[in-house]
Image (cartoon, rainbow, N blue to C red; front, side, top):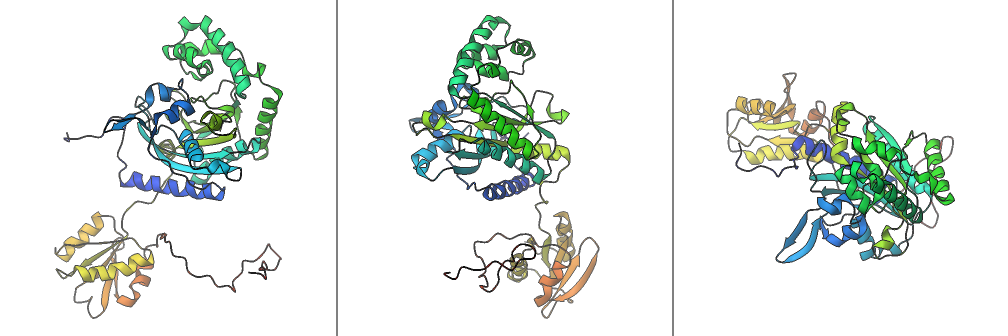
Length: 458
C-alpha cells in the first residue's frame, strides 16, 4: 500500500479523465458564450457568512457540509460549496449590479462539501453554472433549462428526464412553510431524523426527503398549489408553455424543491434515468431555479435572479455509462527517434515544425538502439515514427514510418509535415494570434442574396 493516499471522498484526475474534463469544459464554455454568458471565476475560499446569508442556515451545506479553513489566526473562511452565492458576492462587491440588465455569467469551478462519500458524490467536485440577474420574465427560466437540455444533446447524453415545479414567491412560501410546519409537527415522531430537523429549520425541505418512512406522510401534506398567488401560477404557466413550444419534454413534480433556501418560483432538475444510478435515490446531472430575493438578502438591490448548475463529474460518468467517448486519448501521435546518440537538438528541430503545424509529437531522448526506441514509441501509443540518423535518413532526409501498417517512406525534411499529415490528423491549436483578415472578403448573405454590404463609414 502506498505511504500516502488521497483524502477520503476525493479522486485524482489521471490523464484520460483530465482530458475528458478539458473536452467537456470546452463544449460548455463555448456554448455559454454563444448564449451570451461570459465567464466569471470566484476564489475557492470565501467568507463563511457569504453562504450562511446566501444559502441559508437551515440548509445541509451550512449545517454540516462546509469545510472551514483558516490561516495564522484568520478564521471565518470556508471552501466554496456552491457557486451562486459566491457569484452574487462578486456581483455586488465589484459593482456589476449596476451594469445593463440582464446581467449574465457562466462559471466552471471546483466545489467542496464535507458530505458522506457515495455514488457520484465527491468531497471535491466540479460544477458548471449559469446565472442571470435582472430578468424577472419566465423566458429567462426557460433559457437556462434550454441551455442544459441542448448541452446534453450536444455531447450525446440522453439518459435523463427533466422535472420542474414552482415553489412560489417569498410571501407564498411563508404561508406554505407555516402550513407545512404545523402539519409535519403532528407527525414528527414518524419522520426520519433528518426530516425532524428540517421541520424546525425549513419545513419546505421535508418535501425533498427520499426516505420511505417520510414519503407517505409527505403525500398528505398541504399542497403548494393551494397557496400560490395568481402571478406565481401565471409565471409557471409561461415556463411550461415556453418549454412545450421549444419541444423540451418535462414532468411537473409537485413535491420538487431544492436543497438551498434561496429558491423562489421555478425549480428544475435533470435526473439520471439509468437504473445503475437510481439505486440510492435520484441523482441530478443539473439543477437550478429562480432566486429573486437572494441579491437583496446579501445587501444589494431588489434584483431578480435565475440560474442552473451542472455536475461535471456526474455528466462524465453518465456519458461513460452510456458508451459515449468524451475525449481523444491524450497521447502523442508522432514519435521522433534517431539512430545517432546525443543529437537531441536535431530531433527537436524535426519535432518543432510538426508541433507548429498542429501534430502531437514526443521525442525519444535516449541513446538506446533504434529498435528499442521504436518499441517504446509503440508502447506509448504513437502511430507514426519520424526517424533520423540512419544511412537512409541522411543528407536532409528522414524516414516516416507508419507503426501500425509497418510501412515507411524516405522523405525530404521540407516535406515531412505533408507526409506525416497523410497518416495522422492535426489537432486544433489554440492561439492568441489571429491572421489578418482580407478586407475584400465578405460573408455572403442568405441564399439568393448578395453579400452583406459594408458600412461606408468604416
